[in-house]
Amino acid sequence: MSETIRLTAAQAMVKWLSVQMTEDGERFIEGMWAIFGHGNVAGIGEALHAYQNVFPTWRGQNEQTMGHAAIAYAKGKKRTRAHAVTSSIGPGSTNLVTAAALAHVNRLPVLIVAGDVFATRRPDPVLQQVEDFDDGTVSANDCFRPVSRYYDRISRPEHILSALPRALRVMTDPANCGPAVLAFCQDTQAEAYDYPVEFFEPRVWRIRRPGVDVEEVARAAAAIKRAKNPIIIAGGGVVYSQAEETLAEFATRHGIPVAETQAGKSSLPQSHPMNFGASGVDGSAAANAISETADVVIGVGTRLQDFTTGSRTMFSQKARLISINVHGYDAAKHGAESLVADAKVALDALSVALGDYRARAFDPAMRDDWLRAVDAHCARPEDQAAKPTDGQVIGAVQRATGDDAVAMCAAGTMPGALKLLWKPSQGGYHMEYGYSCMGYEVAGAMGLKLARPEREVICFVGDGSYMMANSELATAVMRRVPFTAVLTDNRGYGCINRLQTMGCGGEPFNNMYVDCNVEVQPEIDYVAHAASMGAHAVKAKDTDQLEAEIKAARTRNIPTVIVIETIARDFPGTGIEARAGEHGYFWDVAVPETSNRQKQRDRYAEYLTQIVKARLTN
Image (cartoon, rainbow, N blue to C red; front, side, top):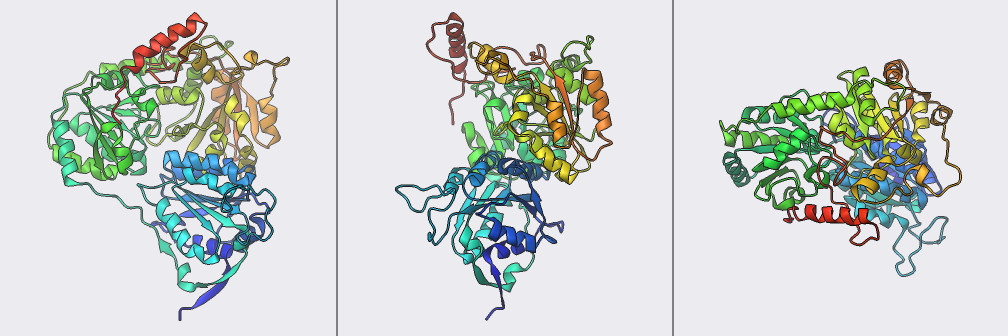
């Protein structure tokens, strides 16, 4: 009979998590973010207290933003390590649903341990319990089901013997990676059980590199060899595979230019001669021009979502798509020729199969012209008294930072502007744009800095996103996590206002404060607000002062918030236009078919001319 140890289910969970290791000798799950409520304080809270010297607990301000910090940490670690997050039942759990969806869309690992109702149902309905009138097994945590890669309800203490290994198996699987959710009944957390001692032996989790299918490589190589003008679309899978150098060698050897998605940006440094910049809706003139004429498009670790493909209108109907992806679901999108494998392994095998193949020479002047246009739009404003554009703000930050800087963002105008205009070193870009979740930025900057303490983290956040979620500034102050937030204030939701008025033919309504049906517009003192949470906060009157404040922030061990008022403008000459979809290429946002306004009717007529260009293959 095997030796056992008597622990509560929650104690056993924390003890087990504390010995799950990476190949580098680190804990795979470094620790747990926690806000306690009646659904987790007595069980999980007591267990975390008992093991606090070996498995740390961090207090946050909101369950969703704790989840964002955990996700940014995992992204910053290229999915090689992760965090856990625990909540009470009810609103604590449902606050985390958005974070779970963000992790699911971006294929990022996070362990969510959500308190749940009583397994015995003895005191039902308990405080915050969501009751389904027709199904007694449902709780609020069932909201996690569509946004988790693994979901389990722990209603018996022995359930963790199988549930925990399953959860980490998903989180460390490059194909199925995503959020694992354990709905942990609150009475079960506190229930004792005799667990086998061997369950708590340290375990090393290796992240595999799935190999290639020989026939898939042969078919992909044959298609590329017939191509005259191929292009590579580099996605986040390049980064998670740590295939950056392999991509650079592949592109250089075979003479194939590279365009980037939001997740793939900085897999090649901007200085690399094969890097033609951003792809698609928010793409560069150089990358999009090459994409239009491409006869073979090679996607590497990308889902080829609508911003990347111009809502399926950017590539020729005759272009052949080849998709290298670790998951068959993503590899088969758009009717692509699938090459299901790890990106690094696939590129190595494909390069061998291609031999001495080189694509037709392309015109490097396109890339040079685009970079000159970028420099012009990011240049120091001649009139420092005028409000700067987002591009001029980006330029100021770029001039004030070095190769160790990482620009990060999530939603609004800045993601498109940064994708186009920021010129990163390798690894100098962190964007959450799979879910484009407003409110990710501040918490994400904290999580990223925890993952990459050696790099300077610059968080670009608009006033709209800042208002949605800013409270983890206080957490970063408490934990002495330094990063710089550049808060661009255009007095509203400027990005959506432009989409509404320019992209969709509408009238300005309910986005900018001036267009809201209010008697008094808010006058928000963002400097005072950020300072009240302990951050160093200052308002920059112009881009010269912004540069100086960026440099000064490096001397601090707390977050710095720099507020600067901006004016929204487009970027003519770089590929961004105030036309269909607002940016460099068409974005399919449905336009009303009927309207009593001529402007709206004209926009719908333009819309019809665009949607007929879409590739309809799924």
